[in-house]
Image (cartoon, rainbow, N blue to C red; front, side, top):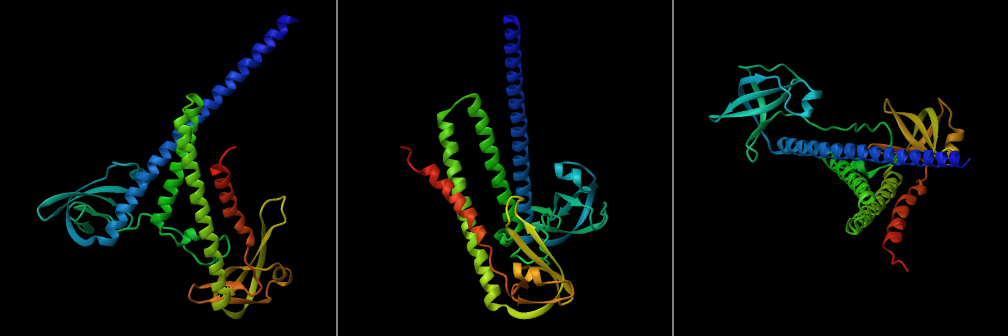
Length: 314
């Protein structure tokens, strides 16, 4: 009996040790993936930033291609049909990455590129990063002031979020192996700063949301439009918080707008609905729609976390 208990105890200890080893290996793998993703995203941001500088300040110049070589010199070349051109300009040879997306370029051809005097380099004139900016759906649906950011600033925000996630995950992994009080203090300070930035951003976001709503309400003209269909979405299965939408026909286009619960209950396909249309922002909402006050919970939540972290411990 004693021997069986001893074997059972040893088995539990082995299982516990294997579980800890698995968690540690999985954490290391996740940390490596986050680090690589962060490194790659910052390199991509740098490339997009430089391309944006060329698009803003570059001078369109037609040059002669002296050599064209299909090569893979960077990770971007794995996802595109890239050719590296050698062109001559003012007695100097320049190398330029060229994506064959609009035509074929070979040795002896003349091609129009962008020349930037500060970088003393040529680049192809094309946008590296674009987002779908369709206004089919009203901005009040799934509101986010990030839509006001430029593509470059959105990418920078993603890089910062990845960097913060990588720092917290890797520092947490290091502290688990080697408890370093100084590193814990730095991590706590950065966490407070990150949460404070989130609280400020979401406060700005909710203020912008209510201003946009008031702009539609006060400056929008009331018009009648045909209803094509209605829909409602819920935030979680345990809650009865619904958002209501209607697909309408406006000036020959389908538009999705926010509506109230009463309008959702009354609206039927082929019926008409009174909406407010603001031409300056090209957006609509129903006359009976009221703002979603539940969005105020997010900045309050982050503000509460900051308060709990910075308050003195007794």
